[in-house]
Length: 178
Ligand code: KMT
Ligand code: NI
Image (cartoon, rainbow, N blue to C red):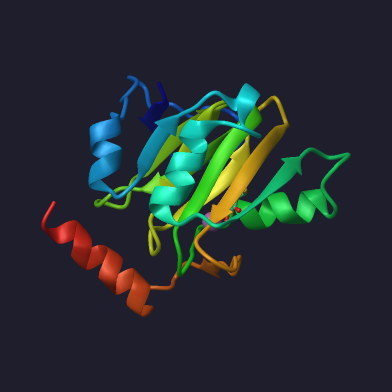
């Protein structure tokens, strides 16, 4: 499975793990309560994987593309990584499937603390619309990820503060009950 933990407050090198001392792991259950869902798939067969096809069908993920995040393959690499690491939200779910390499997704919990989610080959994650999050490579400096979307993709990110957005208010309200 997937590994996640609460982050320390240090601002140095975003690519390091930034585990709290002592280590405070976060379970899949805790992630679910934030609206974050996870599957583990066989990335070696992604082009013909019936499990992936089923998830896409069930959830309506009609769009997909593949992004390779590495300094030699991604145009405006530095600029994009900087943008990805700005705390932001989207109006739609962010769905990512790691096909190769690894990376971190950081999400805010209900008390506004950062949780770091370590994504490796075969990990598929969905971040709910309206959750504050950010993305970074780790020290390996490389990931290849499938981006999935319901319908035509909208990549627009709204940097924090975006508390007045309806999607943000809906997300916060959906957290109340859980
Ligand atoms: C986002 O919006 O946070 C991203 O697209 C992250 C990079 S995709 C692996
Ligand atoms: Ni995002």
